[in-house]
Image (cartoon, rainbow, N blue to C red; front, side, top):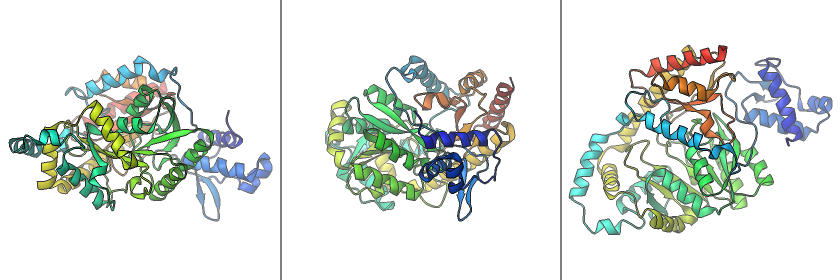
Length: 473
């Protein structure tokens, strides 16, 4: 059942979406709304805060609240998933598997891929380090590197943390078989079957799958396409539910591409620390920023060992090498034991190659080049969306990463769009897979990390034309 402030917010949202309240229109003051609607001022404030979080209105100092220009909005409600919900069905799993398979076939333009083009990464240089590393490998390293992982690579990761101002002990860092293993191990370390885990909405599809597989329950928290998870909504959810852990991507979130502001990160960490709730911080695109410096991870503000920071080299350096890590805070030893019991260690050759590359090559120069290239791809993708898609299409402009989240006209079924695009050798990631209750059926995630593909712009033109056809039928 919705609260009074949620109902009032929904009434205003209908007026905005229906064009009754146009861009720039001033909303009634809190005092006026309280008197005319017979609501407390606190209720009106909460409604306005919720509309702000959805990107529909903005506060102007000493002036009041005004309707914002049309922009992406965050989802409106939280809901705990249950095992009987349609998310657990084979259709969604099969959709994701087909998407992964087709995105790897050369005949498809991989707008639906979860990874940037491997051509952006220094694979020839890594191959040389792979050869040299295995040629010079001390045979005893094979056994010694099982716990907690290759020391040279862990120290290189520690150095990367240091560049962000974080003093992380290398013994806290456990190497894993990619970020997905890190995230799954973290979930196992901090939860038990039946526990509630807060996730963003929309969220990373494998997060929902992992939560279901471990017999946990997902609680979706409204998340803004520009500013990330709504901390106020999370605080409200914490009062209503017994949340055992959070799984968030504060930096260049998948699928939204959102970047949580600094103050919101500090507020998030403090909120969870007061309640002793662990945060699994999924941070695989942090190095792919378009501004002057890397966004600081939430872990920087952790004073209690509650943040489990998960990273990977797959997105920014070595796709296919499957090397990730977790700085596990107070849970590091339990994570290490879980990893030993499940996979022992990541592949020794991959780890040795990356450790050698980081120590001897120019990783930061590669990153600068990759970031500049992705920024150019993003600009081209946004220009194409503006030119070829209906005017009602709404898109954020991410400050890093390689994902573009599109809200299409509500008459468009993204799954039908995906099927039509697939028939034209184009993959898309339909919004259906990013939530437990299919609330994003008119949204798609676009991967602009393959912008060098000569078919990229024409593929976006084709998708835009398909959207127009569906929306007019």
